[in-house]
Length: 461
Image: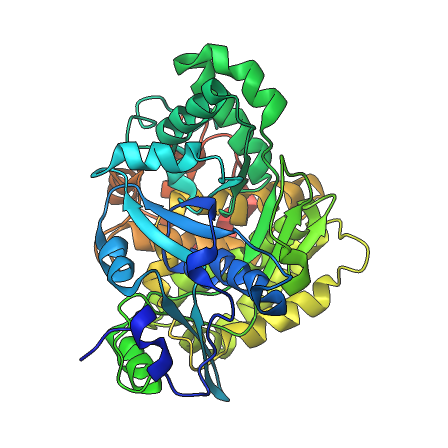
């Protein structure tokens, strides 16, 4: 069976949307680290839409993307034989809507071609270096500072630093470093971590970085489950028999809020649905504490109840009520909304999105890396409500289910702190005992939230 490629675009069914611009004429303006499914369904999708403005004649130009895989060659093997093309399939109860995205030029594997990665960052046409490397990709210690043992020569820090060093030596301008990961205040965190890395490895570059580069904060939102063989078969059928090894399946909803603080030019993302704002904080806080908080709750409680997918868990009346309570009664009162930001309507819309029956978002996927996620998703809400003299029964039930997950009840524990967390759970008699040790002053998640006696009423054995 033939694969999707520039040479097979003309054979696609007419109802499949495709790039309207001249791909070969576009220079690479964006280098993206972590070109997984989310980036392909979100930032690359927005960039493709911007390039499509006015059929690429009077619209945006020279914003092609070079994707970087830090270690695995899997995505490169999927995308490079297809000339960077791939399908975004938006699934809903009304069916699937397909679009071929053409904004990605190529994918480099940093572990195999490090010099090419550095050259891509250093190229004169590059204006933006963006990242979706997940929370653990930032190589932070428990106190939030850079862990230099983790930030080694195969981290993005090394490649970005070497590329910036080459730019400075060549007399080129700086770049915008754009974090698109689920970290509160991700731009400020990225800037701080980069400066720590530079101060250790290239101290002479620090003044140039401060003068020439920016790190805007962002809030990203789109549910993108891992692509399955069934998804690929559906896409191949819709493409008239063409295989697409790089396709992604997602929901119709998408949101991207970006702090308007760029070091140089940028695509006209705001013309295709992104929001350029002066302050991202209220949006990212709502997303982390409400959407992501409810997602983690459904993951751990849903797995414990025997469910596999988000839409199955939210169909359970008890879990639906639990997720609703978390968002409306526990998280929302801790958030100061931006003008026009309706948190009650946001919660209602999230429940509807979770219930999408065509989006097989696996709970075990959401349950990964819990130690990196729950501080922002749950513990900040717990701390804020404790300061208000309240508690969070829904989140506390989630913590109990997370501890159950750490026992191995749902299979092997995929978490960078598993070696510290799982022994605590194994020797504890109850979830309450495990929580006490995990969150104590000397525990692996110290400093975020300290359980009180009344909290344990909701952390049941």
